[in-house]
Length: 439
Image (cartoon, rainbow, N blue to C red; front, side, top):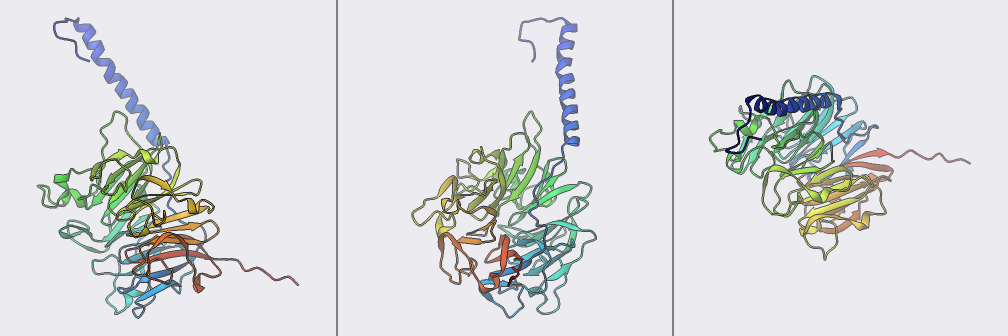
């Protein structure tokens, strides 16, 4: 602190006093740097150990059901043949990416902007799963509206397709759309990725966060409103080139998990477990007070006092799963997407879905205006907008409370993961062990 006006201090004293804070800061930085090295960031990638099968339902007009070009819709879950070793699924706007136990990935659906990452020049090839070529084992996959991404075992990230903003296609890189995988952040080891509709979030092994893509709703967490438009003086370079989210605080923050909603981002801070959020909040879907877009991460206090396993966010609502297996929701109520019954109102903070309290939920997913939950016993519940059959109920009606989903092709199977797309849904399911009859 500088001396007050009119107060004279000896030169030797002034030098000592101004030196101490620098020495202290150097010591703190040294301790912090050591803690970064020692702290191992291990986020939950949501993969399963045992390979399973994929089921799809909803609209299939661009091949996103993976059942061939002649299948335009499925009102109940149907098995995609040929794959029984799937350990992770990701549903995009009109396409999907799935991870096999071998570390290879398959994709299917709309490929207009390269979201499949493979050649689909053969007629009908986009409507059935096909392999994406990468040079190492994949450990995580994500999908947005028109892009896909993969995290490799060595920490490299590859992406393909395109981001979009209010002006149309942005491209994935400055070169434009990328129809084959390109490395996104060379030289930096990543431990988890997350895709929103048109942005990509990456968590480094040191607990820091990079983002790229569309930033119009604040979802990048690092550009001001004026800079978020592609016509800013920096052009799209600052948006498409991954940038580090900086925090103007005295203590450097580290994060150990990330999630991306369609137009927002969530990150869990290490020391206190606070959930930092940024992005669209017009229906309180990120849990902050004012219904404005937040362009820099801020702690959302509605997440306090609980340990969170997974967070999933649609266009205007958010689901959160805690370590007790309970599901919480907030945001817009229309079409029943909150699952709180016909008389509920919009929720500006997290509210527990009491009808699921007796179920031990292990996975959740939000589609555009749909919600899903998978229980430990292998049951799938769905609620929200059903106009395209994406709830799997067999009808096109909206559902305002969690409904158990049944189908002949789900019989004998245990749902373990779910992923909501634009107008379609994927399930990852395991075959239940057959009980031996004993005479």
